[in-house]
Image (cartoon, rainbow, N blue to C red):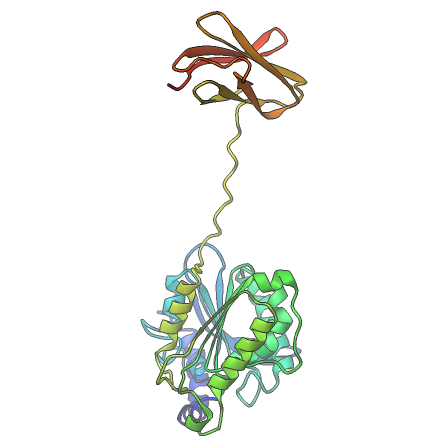
Length: 360
C-alpha cells in the first residue's frame, strides 16, 4: 500500500538497513534517550523497535506504524518519516510525547495481512515498554500510514481501545472492519480519531490499485456509525499517496487540533478547606443573607442582627454545612442604607460576628 518506488527501495535496502541499525544503536554519540533497533521477540513474532524519549516528565507515548515495506522504520534517520526537523519524532517530542516506532514482525513487511497475530505482537511490545520505560495508557497517540492505518482501524482499535485513552491519526487509509466491532460507551468517549488522506490518493493513481481515499471514508463512516463522538477528517486536494517528508507536519496538525500534549500529568488541585464559622453577607436594600460555614456536629445555629433602633432580626437553622440566614422579611424589612451588626451563636456561645450596610 505504498508506491512501487518506495517498496522497491525498501527491499533493496533491507540488508544495509539492518546492519546500520545495529551500529547506530551503539554509537557513542547517540543520545542515551534514543534507542534504535531494539530487538524484541514474543510468542507472536520477532522484530525490533525504535524508542525516542521526549526528555520531559510523564510517559505520554506516540506509537508509529509505517506502511507496507516499512521504509520509514528501516531508515530512522531519513526525513521521509521519522527523522529531520520536520519529522514525526521531532514534532512529537516538541509536544511532550515519547515515540515508539515498531517494525512489523510479518515477513511480508505489512501490518495488515496477518493482522490478528501482529496485533498480539504489538500488545507484547507495549507491555514490555510499559514495564521497562513507562507508558501512559491515559495519554497514548497511535499514528499509522497506509497499511499501518488499515491495521489501526481494523485490528488494533477493536482489540485494544478499551485499554487506552488518547487519539489516533490514520493517513493514506484506515478502512472499516468487515465484521463490525463493538465498543463500550466509555471507550468511545476516551478516543479522538483523525483521518487525513489526499483526495487524489485513489485507485486510479495507484500502481497497486489501492483506493486509500475510499478506505478512509469507509473507516470514518463505520466509526461514526458506532458512536465515536470526536472524529476529524481532512482530504487535501491534489495530494496522492506519496507523502515523503510530510508526515510530521500532519501529525503536529492533528495533535494541535485535538489540543493533545504530553508531559507531566497535572496534579489535581487540593480543595482549600473552608474555616469553620467563616461568614459572608449578601446585601440587598431591605434585607441581607448571612452565609455561615457551620462545622459538623452542630445541632442548632442562630444568627441575630441589630440596627440603630435596637430592633433584632434572627433566624435559627439546624444541621451543619453551608447555611444561609435571612435578615429582614416582608413583615419587618431592614432599612436601606443602614449599618447593622450580626452575631452567630450556638446557645450562648458567640462563634462569629460582623457588620454590613444595606444598599440605598
